[in-house]
Structures are given as structure tokens and as C-alpha cells.
Length: 197
Image (tube, rainbow, N blue to C red):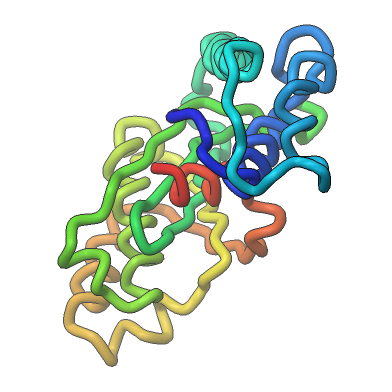
């Protein structure tokens, strides 16, 4: 993940990392303090990125990467894919749940959109995000029930109206998918990956 250039991007990154704060070593707020200080009202929208900020950013990223190493994918158990699309990229996160029903990260992925893909309609971009996520994590989700968490749930309704969506809907039939609506405010992991991808 690239360092942020604006206060808005700092907030997106903090939202993403905070979503998995349970798995980040030590105290999340202690490590993230230099970054959260950048989001105060007194700070300009165009931030001044220092070595202190870079150190905190690197520490948080490394902690999250280490968290994914702690969890081995359990085949046969339910899994989920958090997906989102923006005008520049698609992002996704593969998750499973602990016994206490807490989401644990297994893997992250994002893909920058081509000029042609950027020109697609919103529903097509969101559908592409689902296709991309399923292909990326196919070896994990193929024989497992997978819940797709997205803030756009129109793929099935739109399929007859678009040849592209119809083809993609047919391609989804090989997977055991459950669709679940999750607003963008609760889908920070995929949202951040798609915006900063």
C-alpha cells in the first residue's frame, strides 16, 4: 500500500487498518497516533509526510501482514469475500470467522482498472470486483460456501439487461455464493483497497 497524499487518504487507510485492529500487535491507537494526528481539523488537507508517519505506517502494515500469517485457511468452513469497486480499481479481502464470530483476514488483493474497465457502469465495475475476487481466491473458495459482502446487490436483477453481466452471472454458477449487502461504511477493508489500489 502506498503512503497517503491527503487527509482523506489517511482516513481511508486508518479505517482499513482499524477494521482489523484486533489482530494488530500492541496497542493500535499507540502505533497509529502519528497518523491520526494528521486527521485533526488544524492539519491542512495536503499533508506533510515525515519519517515518523512512514514508520507508523510501515509498522501497521507489517502487523497486518503478520496477522494473515497467523491464520491458516480452514477448508470446508464458511468464508467470506469483502468486495468493492471504485473508478480506478477493485479491491477484495478473503475472510473466515473465529469461534467468537470475529472476522479474521486471510488475504488481500486489488487490481487497477484499465481505461476500458474504468468506463464501465457502476454495476459492471462492482460485478467485475466479484469476478476478480473469486478468480483471485479460487483455490480457497471453489468447494466452499462463500458469502460475498458488497454495497451493490444488483447483479442478478441486471443480468438479463446486459450481455456482459449475463456472461459473468453464468461464470458465477460454478461457485456456492451467498449474497450479503454491507454498506460502504462497514466495508472499509475492500473500500480502501479499491480507492488506493
